[in-house]
Image (cartoon, rainbow, N blue to C red; front, side, top):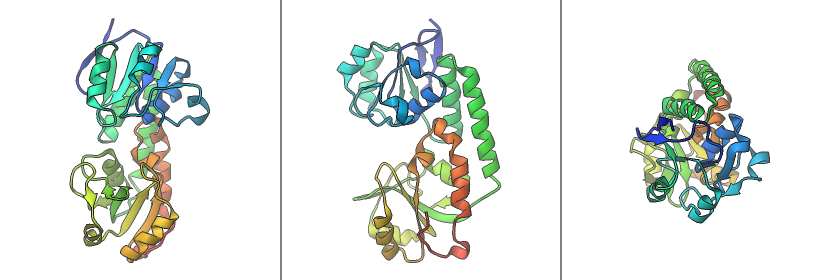
Length: 269
C-alpha cells in the first residue's frame, strides 16, 4: 500500500482509494463532501454540520474530543482524518493501532491549503483539490487590496472571556483582513474585564462559535468599550480551514467595507 505524509510528518500507509472514511473535524468533513466523497464518508462527529442536507445520514462517532471508540470500530474505516488541535491525542493514538490515521496541523492559510491538497491526494481527488486551492488563493489575493487597518480583539468565549491570540488560524485570518490583533499571547488566552478595557481595541469581534455571541452581548460590551466598534461575526468563516475558505474572502470584504469610517463606534454586523 502507498505511503502518504500527514502534517505531523508521519508516514501513513493506506489503500490507493479509501472507501470507508471517518472524519473527526467539522471543517474537514465539509471538505470531503465538497470533493465529491459523500458515498465514502461513513462516520463524522456530532459537530459536523455541513453540508446540512448530507451529514444527517452519516453515522456519528461522538464529539471531537470525546470519541465513541466502539462506534468507530463498528464502522471499520480504512482511513480516519483527524487534527492535532481539535482531537484528543490519546484517542487518536489509540486509533492508530488499528487504522490509517492522517492528521492535519493547521495554523495559517498556507497550511490549510496544503491540507486540502494532501487530502485530495490521499482520497484520489487531487484534481478537484488543486482547483479548490487555486480558487481560494484567488479570493485571498483579491482581498489583499482591501485592508481594515484597525486594532482588534477577537473573542471566542464568555465566562471567562477567551480571545484568539498568536499562532492561531483565526489570527492569520485577522492579519489578512488588515486587523492588528492586540492579543499577542499564544493560542487562546483568558481576558478579564480590566484586561479587555486596557487593550482598548478599535473593534471588538464577537464570534458566532464556539460561544454563540448574540445581539444582547453587543450591548454589554458597548458599555465596557464605548469607543469601540462591536461586530458579531461568522466564526466559521474565520476558523474553518477546509472548503469553507472559498467563502471567507467575500465575507471579509463585506465586513471591511461596512466598518465605520474615522473609528466611529457602531454595532452593525
